[in-house]
Structure formats: C-alpha cells, structure tokens
Amino acid sequence: MSKHTPASDGLRTGIYSTTDKFREVKKHHAVIAGYNGALIAVTGPVGGSLDAVSLANARLYAAAPKLLEIVEKFIDIVESAGPETYADELSLARDTVEKAMKGDLT
Image (cartoon, rainbow, N blue to C red; front, top):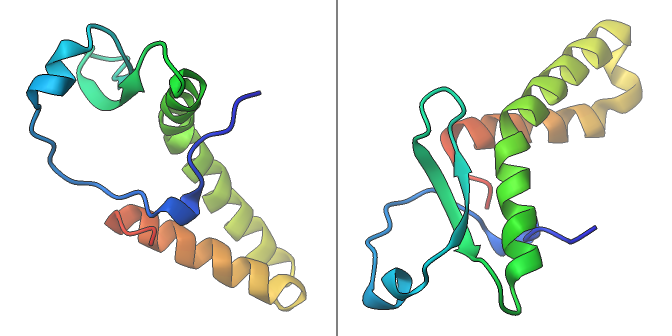
C-alpha cells in the first residue's frame, strides 16, 4: 500500500492557478464529486516518481467525508461511555475535527 502525504506536511486549502508546467502534464490523479463530476482536488501527475503518493492522496481525500463521519461517531461513543478514560484521545479527536472543519490542520 502506498503512503499518502503525512499530516505533518501542513496540508491546507487554497486557490491554485494553473501554470504552463501544470498544463503540460496530460493526466493527473484527482478527486471527483460522484454526484456531478466536478473536480474537487488534483493531487499530482499520473506516472513518474510521485505516482503512488499522488494516487494515495487522491484516495485519502476522497475518503475524508466518511472518515470524518466515523470520527464524529467515535467521539459520541467515547463521551457516552466515560470520557475520563480516554480524555487525551477524545480531546485530540475533537480538536482535529474542529480544525478540519475550518480547513486548518497545521
């Protein structure tokens, strides 16, 4: 299994303006909305030394909504079962979800 870009790399949201070098690459791994085919994210060119990382990133980004849903359910379960047992983990999960919703995972 290929490894995606680690969170410590400071992924963030923003606006990307294409460059001539970007347009030279004919195929890119991307995240596409299933309901209307809209482009959500381009993770890198197909082929070359970063192909596996680019594909892994696209798959991870596409899974993000489901992962968020699971983490939110985890928070609810731990809170109802006795949050004091996993206070640090619960705090980390809450903080991560809050930052993700703001687009700030630095």
